[in-house]
Length: 520
Image 1 (cartoon, rainbow, N blue to C red):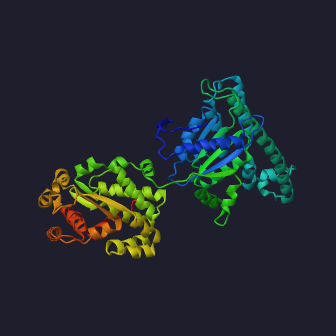
Image 2 (image 1 turned 180 degrees about the horizontal axis):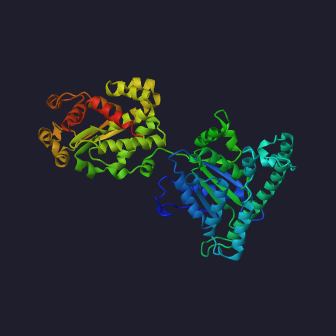
Image 3 (image 1 turned 60 degrees about the horizontal axis):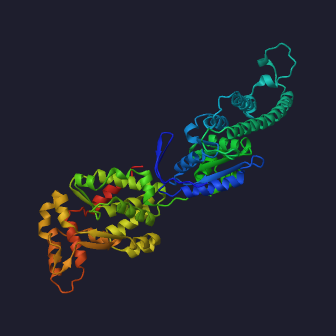
């Protein structure tokens, strides 16, 4: 079964975008795997539980929603958002009710006498609370149960309890209830299996299902976000009650986070990883990459664009000719250099966005520096201080590479193209018009300054601690008169930065960082 998610789709009144993370291929692969494990022949079915392990930002819910929706054309499907209903006491009853109600919509004969009989069988079989009634009764010390059958007419509160007889009574009742519980679980499994079989045999007309559309898929989402006790009880129910041939479970979690949840129940020293392995036949890792599609999925990247920035009279240097795609790609290159997690990357990007949108009118800022500072500050204070000391207030990329090898080598490979389109500056940003006229020519003795490419860490050294506009203008004029001028492009860029009135005070960027870091 192949999946194609190239087009957006509305599911349960929620709009899901096209598959820009290229997840459909994983649905195709996992469907084949699960059908091979769970079986498609009703005479040779198995129970199978897959843990879909993905960290935040991997798009678990998007993946499960689109996958489960498309499967409905060929299989009975139930999707459960565990976190949305973890306020309910019983995960067992939650799964049961969802199996009944959701599968009703996948058969044309949900109102038939036979279907109603199936419901009654499930409800009747589920009535006994497996073990819970017993625990509630005796841990609550219901002493009337412990008392011997003989009565001397005295007030029970004045009688001395015969704990020997009480113990015998507890053991007797316990054995009986264990036996009854086993029978009730067995009856419940048979009732659920019969209901699924009924849905398979009586599909919605024109749904495209076939006679043997096994297995039935049960998707459990957001379990790692649930209350610890609820999450553990859900896993226990799947393991001990719903291990029914023909039912397959896909439990989507951040499994590391789920391990912490389990430890909250059993203690910090408890081996949660080994415990969880008991519940899953296999684990499949849905990997996450830092790319611009991730930012587009989790952030409103339409908040700022070239038109809005022009209207606000804000210049994001060196992205003067602002193109969202190129800016997103730059952000991702910095986030990867800093080794941010997907959650951290989204958090940093949102801080960057809000910072830009709250700049005062008629402002030019070093957007590249802001992105780096925000990213390193989110990663660690040590990394931020290293960059601040050796890239912002000092110029020593080699020291950064020595202290932080991955960051240092990555920054050396990030290059930015800068476009010196001064005629557009004059048109689009009236607040700097008065400075442009003296530097409007593109050529000085055959030299062109329209395009310039600079390594990211060099941009920081170029743009901080500059002299005044006149000083840099004289410097450029002197260089263009030389036959083989050195550093002409660099000096022209410094003059250009001054023309744009870009903020070059390091304290300004420290203040922006300190304000933004408190936004969580």
